[in-house]
Image 1: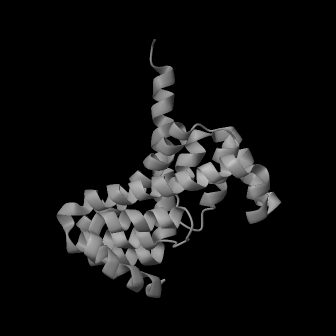
Image 2: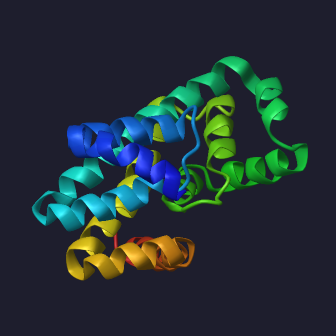
Image 3: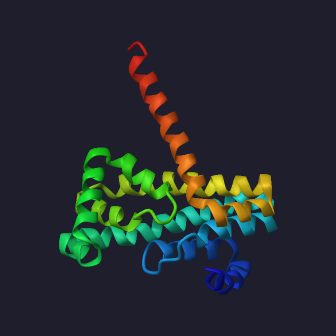
Length: 196
């Protein structure tokens, strides 16, 4: 990963948030670059803390655009396209999750860091008839929460944030995902119990 980061860093230094959006688009569509966008947000924020939100939002926009490419490939290529790329048992497991939780499953997998099987879910959303607007919203919320959280973390903790994200991205994201899920469950229960 260090070589990949070294290769893309000059590009990001030159083009800033636009470069980060392009890298996120490539990562979510054709070229897998696990955790590169996460680390770029932290490093760019350490250099220019006042732009943390801009870097996070541009990376989110790139992620949504790249995910839409894969989503439409799923719509066009269907089940055969999916099964050429992933094992049948992984597809079946992911399909059960999408069928049961729909939007929330897509948002959660968009939020989760590697090694979450993100592209299986993206293809299944296209094949399974999830609407493009619903899909884009789920990805924007999931990735947006993740990237804004990382940017804010970098503002608060500086160089220490880069080390923690590099070494513990999965654990930190799963913890934040658990907190978000609990907050969502409490909110939904509160809405159900509220008098009409």
